[in-house]
Amino acid sequence: MKNLMRNRRGQNGFTLLELLIAVTLLAIGLLAVVSMQEVATKHTLYSNRTSVGAALAQQVAEDILSWNIADARVNTATGPADYLFLTDPATNTFAQQITIQGAGAYTATYQTTPNVGQTGNTRVDVAVSYVGGIAPVASFTTYKRLD
Image 1 (cartoon, rainbow, N blue to C red):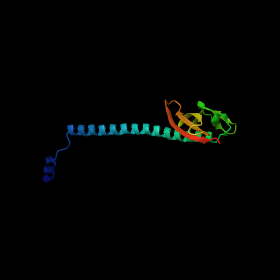
Image 2 (cartoon, rainbow, N blue to C red; image 1 turned 45 degrees about the vertical axis):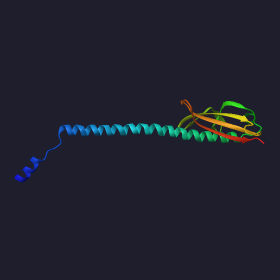
Image 3 (tube, rainbow, N blue to C red; image 1 turned 90 degrees about the vertical axis):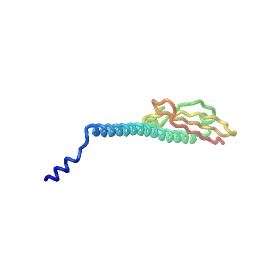
Image 4 (cartoon, one colour; image 1 turned 180 degrees about the vertical axis):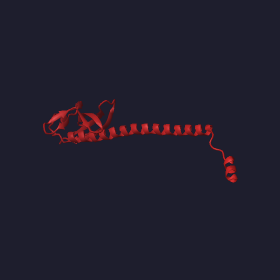
């Protein structure tokens, strides 16, 4: 019993100062993790909007490419025009914006420029914007052969 008591007296525990330093370092580490999580969440949201915008831009461009070559929107130069999304195929309802579940609302504009590069080609430029955003999140350019 005497040996056991002697060993305990020789061991010292943590001091209050050491404990405060350890808790402070832990708090700094946790704050850094929270900060990184916030940045990661923001960039994930931006990446999601960009991906959805790119897919929508390609979809709009492919729809425009399917228009008849006699369509005036393809044969004549159009300044930036609003693209109308088909929101309800059953009633043929169109709207200037489309809402993607989990990704938000988007609008699209397109511009056609005939005879670019060579006669018989129309350049199609599409820009997709997030509703509430400042700049387009995605753009897409393609060409339609008219003859």
